[in-house]
Image (cartoon, rainbow, N blue to C red):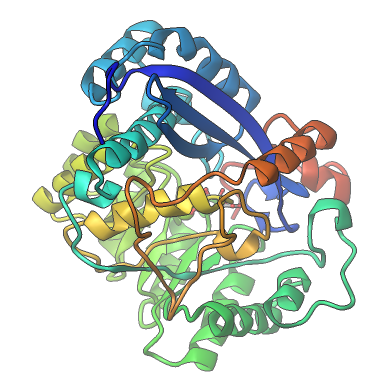
Amino acid sequence: MTYTTGPRIKEMYITPIAIVDPPLLNAAGLHAPYALRTVVELVTEDGISGISEIPGNKDIDIALEASRALLIGKDVFQLNQIRHVLEGHFGTETAAQRGEAPWDQRKLVHIFSAVEVACMDIIGKITERPVVDLLGGKMRDHVPFSAYLFYKFEGAGGELGFNVDPNATGWAAARQASALNPAEIVAQAKAMCKEFGFQSIKLKGGAFEPRQEVDAIIALREAFGPDVPLRLDPNALWTVETAIKYGKEMEPILEYLEDPVRGQANMALVRKALKTPLATNMCTTSFDDIPNSIAVGSEDIILSDHHFWGGLRSSMTLAGICETFGRGLSMHSNSHLGISLAAMVHLGAALPSMKYVLDTHYPWQSDEIIVGGRLKFEEGSVAVPQGSGLGVELDREALAKLHQNYLACGLTKRDDEIEMQKVVPGWKFQSVRW
Ligand code: GKR
Ligand code: MG
């Protein structure tokens, strides 16, 4: 395609949305009936549109609004300049600003990610190439993901809240069932693997005391056998002593143990004591963290996330660093829709190696904002979307409906502690619990 006035950004649309999310439990508490996302659309002077999706948070939306004036008129190909200008305006953020929750709370990385992915979608459309080609090209056609199990209360989320739809069948029924003990976790795993074809399983821990979560891992091993890799993620709630004790017990059956303890120093102690590899999306979460990660040896695998590492090209830089220093690389996720999934798939397809299949929350979501509806999984994998750019287009009707959900639900940021307190009065987040 030829353009007459240059691929310059003319419009930026920022749309917060709320998507149905079931009552999933984690170290920080309980998921609200809706998870928040923000959809960003950039439009060039030639009317070419590029889209992206990031975790929703009112403060980040306000910061995005503040970046609009800096972005209008910029050439979408000049991503280095765009980043420089945004950094100049917002200043730099330290790794410490990530916060103690399982998810990242920095603003700048989210803004970079939103802007870069939308620009790359546009660049792909102009050059008639998929985003994966802009990242150096495809290493695989299908990107494999892991089942992502959660302890949960009975309920479907959204307007149904804790109620259930009695007519639901298959995965829709399992998705709303409770999972509060090893047997229910195994039932959830069977339903999810049957529906999506996953061949690896991750259990989100940190919800119950370690004995129960380790028993669930043992039950999964008995149900699925030794060929299905298993992972457990207590989101840093364990002490070093607890992690070593239960880590040793699970040594024969875990593919990796994710963030058993808080901080690089503690992770390094656990790593020295165990044969099982350690993975993280909590202790090494930014480029600033890399030197100390290498110095102390805090983990074997870094769980990248383009929303938290500042975009797709930064994630490729991280892949290079991991290769150099012998770290494995996989991908972290949060509740998300198809624009994020498409970006994850393009990135996953470009990664030089894929020893550890990627995380995704996608099975827990039922809404969608892309034309054609929800992306399909076959044998646990998603095919790289066809077409230029991200290969997915915004369903504007769905976007409007999900924006209405946002306005109606009254949520402005994720706060799992407050949600948990609605069920267990007085419940408090503890950064280390067991
Ligand atoms: O969705 O509750 C959740 C997870 O706990 C998520 O927020 C984490 O960031 O998936 C994540 C993880 O691997 O730590
Ligand atoms: Mg994690």
